[in-house]
Length: 620
Image (tube, rainbow, N blue to C red; front, side):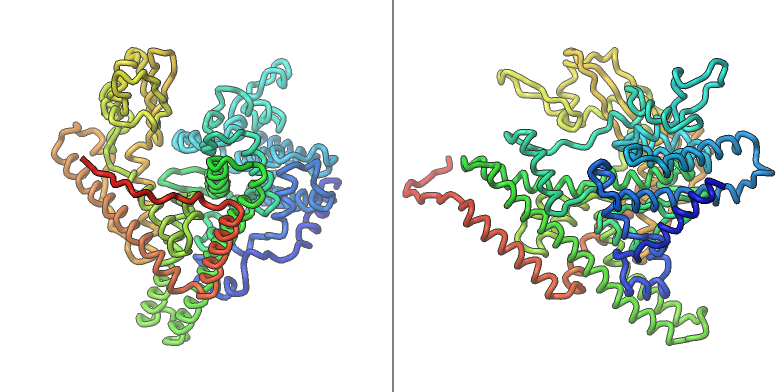
C-alpha cells in the first residue's frame, strides 16, 4: 500500500508538468502527415530540463522546487517502466529470480524517491535505470560491450556488470553481478581500475599557455551565459526515435534515451534494452559541441595572451561572444528545420488532395514520397553532420558569416567521412583469426605517432620519427599483443622507455555495419545504394586468397565507397538548402551579430598594426 501511494504521488506530479517547449504546433501538424520523422516527440517533456541541469550540476545547490520536479519526473518514468515490465512478466508466472530482483530494484527506487535531498544523486538515478533495463533485457552480447568500451563515462554501466564486492556479500551468498545486488554495489565497482570504459577520456582543450584555472573559469562563465550541461530524457517504450525528434532535442542539448522492453539494434549489433539505452546516452557523452564552444573562447583568449594583455579581464567578453554566437547558430538551424517542416506540410497536403480517400493511389504515393525526400534532403544531412559525424568545431564559430559557418561544419563532416577507409586491418569476413599479430602490426605501421599519443623527444641530430614504422627501433617487439574484438581491434606494445602504447581501430565488419546505417539515412533522400548479398558462413571458411572471396570483397568495397560518396554529396548540398529555406531575416541577424561582436572585440583588443616596409624580399 505504501508503494502504491508513493507511485500515485510521483505520477500526479509528473502529469502536472507543463507541455514541452522543444516542439511546436508545426511539429504536431507534420507528425500527422509524416509520423516517422517525429516518432517519439509526444513523449518528450522539456519542462524538466532546467531542473535536471540544476540537480545534475550540484543537487545541494538546487532549489527544493527543482529537486521535487527532477525526482518526480525521473522516478515517475522509472516506476512506469517497471510497472510495464511487471505486466509483461506477471508475478504468478514469472520465475523466482525475476520476482526477487524486481522487488529488490523496485523497492530501492521507492526508498530513493522518498529519501532526503542529500541522498538524491545523479549517479543513483543512472544506476536505477541500468538495473531496471538489465532486468528487462538480460546482459548484453560481447559485440555490444565492445562497442561501449570505447565510449567515455561508461564505467558505471560496466561496474554494474562486475561481480558484487566481497564486503557486501553475506557468508555463503552466491556471487552475483553488482546490478543484481544493489545500487551500492554498482557504485563501488565504477571506481575499479580494470572496469571497462573508465580509461576513455574526452580530449583535453588545447590550452596552450593558459592555466587550468583559466579553463575552469571559462567553463563557469560559459554556464552563466547559458552554455548548460546536457540533459538525458528517458522515453518509455519508444524504440528508435525519429530524426526530426532527435535533431530538435539535440539543438536544445537534450538527448533522448528510449526505454524499451524489446530488441534494440544499432550499427548491425543486437544491443538489447540496457545496452541500447546506454548507447543512446553515449551519443550525448561524446557530443563535442559544448567543448568546441569552450575551445573557441580559448582561441580568442590566446590572442589576448599573445598581445600581452590581461587574460582574466577578457574572459567575460570572449565567453559572451562565443556562447551567444553558438546559441544563434542553433537558432538558425531550428528555424531552418521549421521552415522545411512548413514546406513539407504544404506539399504532403497537396499530395493527399490528389486522392483523398485512397492511400494506395500511385500519383498520391509518388507525390508523398517526393515531399518527404525534399524535406529529408536538409534534415537528414543535418542529422549526419551533427549526430553521426560530430562535425562542430571552434572554427565554425570563428568565420564571419553563416554561409561560411555551414560550409565549415560540412567540410568537417566530409573530412571525417574520408577517414572511413576500407583497408581491412583484420579482414571483413573473419576479423578474429585471418591475420597473425605480426601481420596486423604491419598494417598499422603507417599510422602517425601523433594519432597514437606518442610524443618523441629528440636532440635534432636526426629527423624525428613521424610514423610507427619510423619509430620501430624504439619498440619492444616482444611485447606486441593484439586484442581482437568484434567491434574494436586493439594493438598494444611497449616502448623501450617503458611506456605502453595502445592503437585502436574499428573492425572492417563493424565499419561496414555502420555504413549500412548511413545507407539507411541515404534512403530518406532517395540515394540508398543496393547492398551486396553475403553468405558470411561460407565466405568465412574460404582462404584469404580464394577468388570467390576476393570478388565479393571487391563488390563490398565498391558499395562501401559509393555510400560514402553519396553521403558526402548529401552533406555538400546542406549549405544551399539552409540558405534557400531559412528565413532571410534569421540569416541576416546571425551575420549582423557576428559583425557587431567582431567590431566590439576590435575596439577592446585592436589587432596590431603591421608597419609597411620598403625592403624587397627575394626568393632564391
